[in-house]
Amino acid sequence: MANLKGKKAKAAENEKLAAGLGITVEELADRNVPTVGFDENGERHFDYGTRRFAVTLCAIAPDVGFEVFQLTTQETKAGKKTKNLPKPGTQDDLSCAEAAQEEFKQMKKELKAVVKAEKKRLELALMTGRCWSTEAWTELFAEHPLMRRFSPALVWGIYNGDTLAKSFRCRENGLFYDAEGKELELPEDARIRLVFPLELTKEEKKAWQDQIWEDDMEQPIEQLDLKTYTVHKQEAKKKKLVRCKGKLFLDEIFGDRLEKFGWHCGRMDDEHDFYDIYYREDKDAGLSVELHTSGNTPFDNMEIELYGTRFFESGTFDWETHEYDEKDEEKAIALQDIPPRYFSEVVRQIMEAGAESYLWDK
Image (tube, rainbow, N blue to C red; front, side):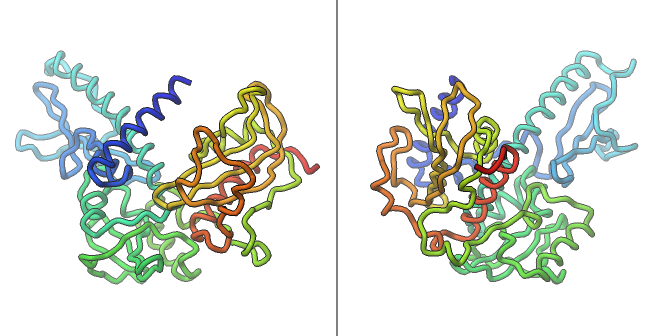
């Protein structure tokens, strides 16, 4: 519980700071992505006293990796690349070498944490359709020593409003290419997003998959291979999604999975320690979602039934106090009016959580 309170306090602090700067929380996070001590070339040096080593970031997806080289007296790389610093030799300064090894250990730990956090942010940006200006995108994904290692394995898009005008990749040589492999210039006034697979034709999708495979890369997050969902014709004008109704799920597994996707458990009824709602709010998308269930208590691993999912404008409710009831159903948004990528991701998250916790039909 203390950890959860700490996260909420940190989130509130970030919101306040971002508001003071006139930017969003995600824009604030862009400014604060750690470099983990790597320079603009993605390199960091470690000193053994008599020997020096360079650790160089490389675009190895799904995780960002690195390679270790010994440096010559002319500061050029020599010898075979390795994945770790070597053990200290008899000619090394032992105190320097031990300090370097401890620093290297902390670097690996921090790098792993930063990569994990930034992958989560990329997944959220894909879901919400977050946009960057050309300048902001270049600063973060083409110039930042860590983030630019993610970029070549992802497919980006230039958008006119919410419509994809052109998809592209930024390869490791720093140049931009379209799905046919032709070089292109990035407009100075572009609006750039991660492309959602529903926006691509089958031919375009395959072309991008082939390019990434030919470059011997894997995508750091699911993008091109993401399972997608669309609004069914009979659902279009409805305000509640009920695709899983009538099925029973193990709530402990279902809830844990949803929380990993960024959902939250609704406030408990104080009298009965009972909750029956999961929700998420995505201010970048201007949307929030609530999922009604048959309910559970935090002390039981009960079976639950899903009653339905509704979408609302962000800020419609106070999720902390849950000061709303079923009379607010008129505030819900018709399913046909939900952005396709956001609808698809919400459904996918519920379906995947359900698949892992499914028990049986009623």
